[in-house]
Amino acid sequence: MTPDDLLALCARARDLHPDLDEPVVELGEVSMECPAERLPDVVRWLKDEGPFEMLADFSAIDWYRNEPPERRFLLSAQLASISHPQRLRLRVWLPEDDPRCPSLVPVWPGANFLEREMWDMFGIVFDGHPKLARIHLPDDWEGHPQRKDEPLGGIDVRYQHGQAVTSPDLRGNRATSASGYPAGRTQ
Image (tube, rainbow, N blue to C red; front, top):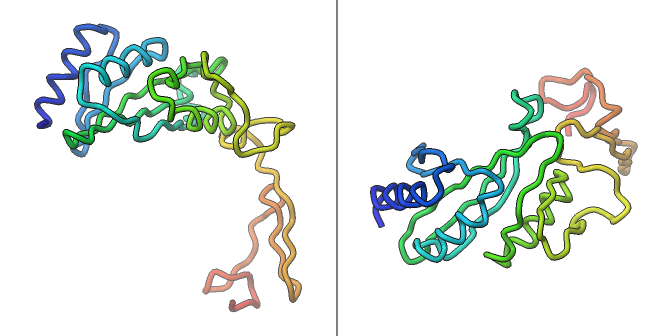
């Protein structure tokens, strides 16, 4: 499959789903923006009718203080074709006040843990997910640490010989030597 074939496939997808944005080619990669509510239909069509056999990655980015607030979280679904070495990125914007997206688990069961991680770290809710539960943090943890408006927090770490690393919320600008180490320390 050539890049032109991939663009033609994207045009067919846009014929079936007119609310998809025009594909964009950046650095040799093809991306399309997709509304959240259409994502499962679009990826199912690209899997069944197109060459994309695999969900290579599904991740999130927090664009805190981005304007407008309807574009705070960006989901990036990387679809990959093994038989025709191509990739397609579907980008989905979610609002700040209620970040929700339909689950891709019915299409690709492997999305299960990726969606759980995005919920755990960013607080993005995936409607229809079989078990949206924390995957990295304890069940009683409050908040979502990858959100840019989440406080840093942390604990002090003490090492042998008196060295210490203070928690990020207590760190200040310390004088450092030319080597980058705190003044008076060489290693």
